[in-house]
Length: 589
Ligand SMILES: [Zn+2]
Ligand SMILES: [Zn+2]
Image: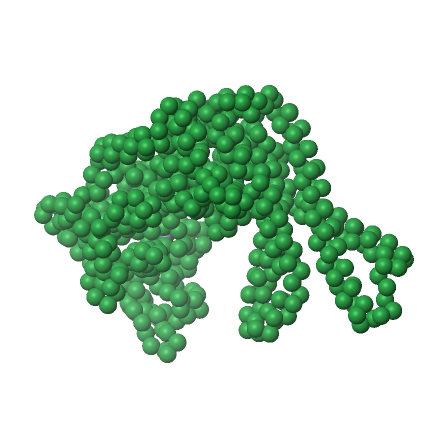
């Protein structure tokens, strides 16, 4: 291997010097680009004017100097705004767009990511590296450099869940290699510059949407006002994409080579690139940031033809794997066999989780009794009636349910049947106290706080696949933060019993045939949130997985009844298998 291509730059100072050169060059290119676009468009407009005003001569000297100066000034101003805006906000825009968040040191997957980043920081000699995580089960990574020249390494929850420690090291090493080579700086800047147009279009679309009623007439006027934005947006997108394509294909090989130098483990890098390729690796909803990723989302389709070389930001994965496997003297076939074997071992050592039906008769009797008693307790608190728009009394409700009702306002008429009093809601001290607690984010009822909404046993904080959740030890219900769900779906620490899998299948069939009275499978009551005490809303888990679950939008929590979380995990895993096109799946057919 050519030694000069894999040498790591000696000092951080040298990298920064290189970055300054790159920015100057990029600014120059941007300026030329604007000169050409603005020059061409304005010349076309002026020349067409000449058809109507024969006296107007563009190329007479007085006009021409003024015209050239105006084009130059306008281009310089736009290029400068574009460039400095990109430098200032680019990284934040990309991170927000990908919904990235800083790792949580309390989470052991995140902690090991932080440790690996720190190891690589030390061995690469960089003064600082920030870390970010993207909440998706898909497998990918990227690096960025922010306006203060601090590099950032970003990985997905899916990658953290799937990668062994040496594979994680290899990924971080690959990203650090991009940082050291200056690719990250260049690509961050290019992507930020083109993101400028995306932002511009987004904001013009938003403006249009916010017009509401007379949207049709207004929108056509807007279209007419923004053709320039659309045109330049399209042009710049093509140009920048082409530019990235040419520079970044070779850079992937160089980064792989440098990563091997840093982590000394070509096989680990090959394994994780392969895993990312067969898994789903889509990130965010924009293809704009593709050049930044470890593997592009559509990597399976990249071939070695000239056509594909022109239009892809990454070289074919197979070629990268070939180089890496040759370094460790094995074939790609042996690599894949190795990954399969590793996968098999992992699968066999996971503890198995059972369905509630497998817990034994006595336990189920206990749950039933507790739930009945809990329902009776709650019924005693249903003492509130509310007057609807038709002037009829609705209810009875518990206090928590009452103030959650959409028609509830502090001025609405309510009735307390226990005290047999009627009046405006705000006149009742209980209601005022509940509203005050809600405002202060305190539980409405201390008695029900942190108790299972179904059986009123105390909820116990526990770790589920490394994620902190609350569980009812009696009825197996689970309280999970909405933000933590992608982590749980990404991580595979558990096997599910055959009975659970059969139950998942039943649920899936009920979703597919909504006419076949799915309500019998999903009986839902009215429950109160164990955190805030407001009534939980029964909503489908997601557009795709229509299993109804209890949600509290106030606390951003989901209450899963026994087996529901596991069933969703089984369904998500099956879907992933189908997406990866791996084993044929006879589960859903
Ligand atoms: Zn319970
Ligand atoms: Zn709540």
